Amino acid sequence: MLATKEFTFDCAHRLPNHEGLCKNIHGHTYKVEVTVSGGLQGEGPEDGMIVDFKRLKVICNKLFNQYDHAYVSSIKDTEVNAFMQKMHFKLVIFPGSPTAERMAKAFYNVLQEWTKDEKFCIAEVKVWETPTSYSTYNESI
Ligand SMILES: [Zn+2]
Image 1 (tube, rainbow, N blue to C red):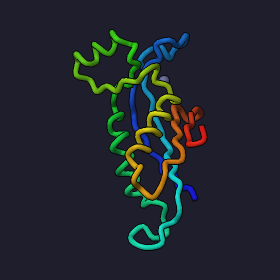
Image 2: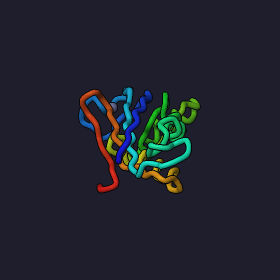
Image 3: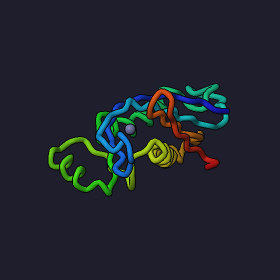
Image 4: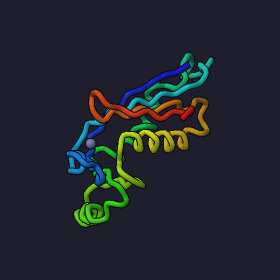
């Protein structure tokens, strides 16, 4: 059984090695779909659920609030990062270009770690960078 909740947040990034416009600082309204898997609970407040969507929302927003209105950067983009830090801008640093693929994998790993003691599993994370482009990371990849 699967259940999915959607989240959105806004952040800026740039892809330093991109040959086109994506090398410039620009923003996206990211949409993230977090899919959980597990059996239905048979009793208690989550009876009939994999997990209460409201509880999943609290867990996921703890992560996505770190990204909302942040600049998501590559660790290799040292001059830009130094400027962002000097200006005290909200900054999230990635090991490489902050693509939708890297974000999906990073979100999956963090959420999986945060929910390792839960009865459900994080099955898949889908990151929509634009209304027509998304990347998926799941347990079979
Ligand atoms: Zn972009």
